[in-house]
Image 1 (tube, helix red, strand yellow):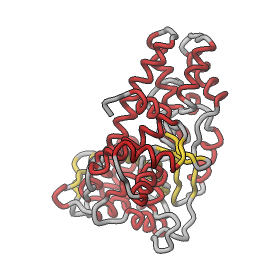
Image 2 (cartoon, helix red, strand yellow):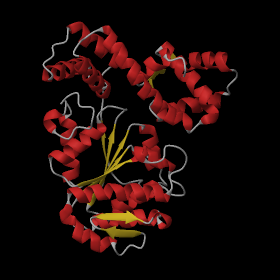
Image 3 (cartoon, helix red, strand yellow):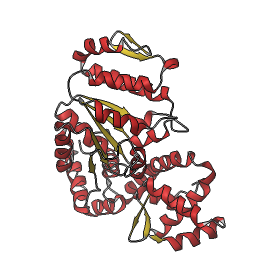
Image 4 (cartoon, one colour):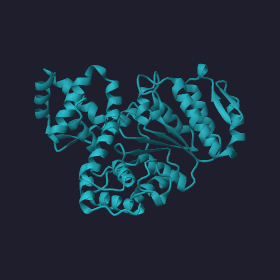
Length: 371
């Protein structure tokens, strides 16, 4: 269904990403070692990947990096446990592999096999455990896709560069394609050290698929078709107002469609209620970012609020207004604040003007005084 808020895994329920689906499928079938699926929050990255893998019956292991600890460094144990849990889900879907994988994994000291499940001995887990599990996947003698969702979280790995593991897989494990998704595109590029001549991945080709927001007409079409599935016929003004507020972000359009369908009525109040509820989600995501930067919290919030209120603002205007609000800020420090927000995709820069990327976050920053 169009307004199903879970990641979609059926082509007939997937909207308007036919070209991207073909591109992803082609990359996987050609056994590209590394594929990046990039796009801002709620642009449908996870849905795109899972739809492709499920519809075409491609075996895959799925790691959701949002399940890793949200604060501080990520330990070897954290990553090993997430990989083991993800691998167990894979084995439940593909029981035919279990006998073979059991023989491989029983040789690894840090892993035990009980029934139809592998377990990591947390006290002994390290990055070598991760490597050995990945190597075991490669030994299955079938092409397997390893999906690492919101991979930019792995920048926080303690005492280890994840791009080194990616380079090892790229060079030596020919039965594996790694698909990285990322909504904080600048941070994901930092993870793989894009453009760095000294990075392990430098000089190795990889495929990028970049998702864009829906156009205004696509957004309208998405809502109209979704409501039709629910036997509902919203007035034109409601569709226009919804698209104006949510600006082509398919995740927020789905949220509105789901909410309005449950209410079975259309009003300005419904749109406002959706914006208020969605604002809580957007602010919680911002909070994850701020929690890692407590000393600069006030500066980030002030800067974001100024951008939200102005809607589009030049560097000089923002610098002047932010200093007027919280006092003197050295220019290098101010530029660093902007750079971090750009890397995390909370803001974008167009024609020398800065703006909030997510329309719901912009609404929240304008209206919710507690932040």
